[in-house]
Amino acid sequence: RAQGRGLGREMMRVLLAQLTARESTGVHLGMGATNARAERFYKNLGFHELARTSDVLYLGKRLR
Image 1 (cartoon, helix red, strand yellow):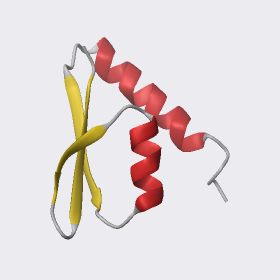
Image 2 (cartoon, rainbow, N blue to C red):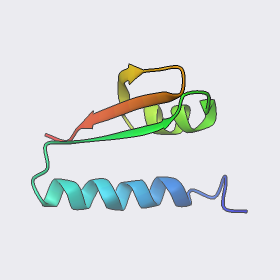
Image 3 (tube, helix red, strand yellow):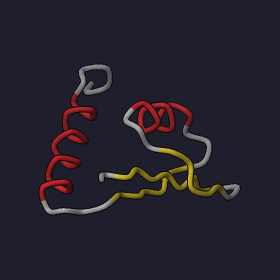
Image 4 (cartoon, helix red, strand yellow):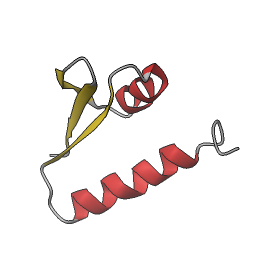
């Protein structure tokens, strides 16, 4: 029900703003390697691939 309503993008905007306010230099995450929709979502937010295994895709984003 929540997909396509911009809620995930807004939650990430708030999270990234909070991390930046706390002077974090970056953020990384791991997700299922075959979840193409999530991969597009995070890459559209500026995340880039750090590493990939058969099961897990690791993405990161510099904040400063």
